[in-house]
Length: 97
Image (cartoon, rainbow, N blue to C red; front, side, top):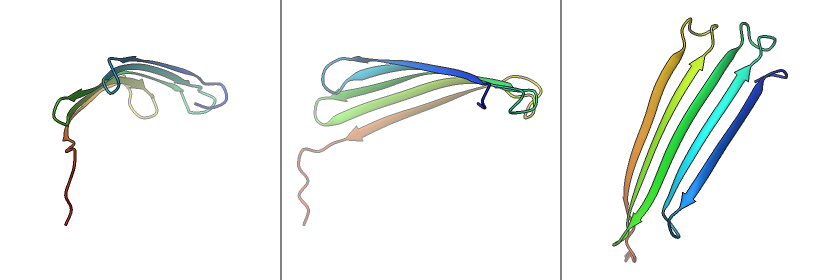
């Protein structure tokens, strides 16, 4: 961000038991034009879910929205989305031989 940039981030996690949770996040950054020609801004928001089901199954989801504007890189503001899904099986006992 440079010496004259600004930035902040916030996040909050809601827990539904020992392993289940939903997390929300937000981030803002502003780069000074003294640090980078014509400066720039970045904003993103995200949500993450972790859920454990019976039988050793877990589910995870992640979704993030991002908007950035750095005139040095692109003349218009750019927006993108990122998402991920996870399904995992956690057996209670593996027998290795």
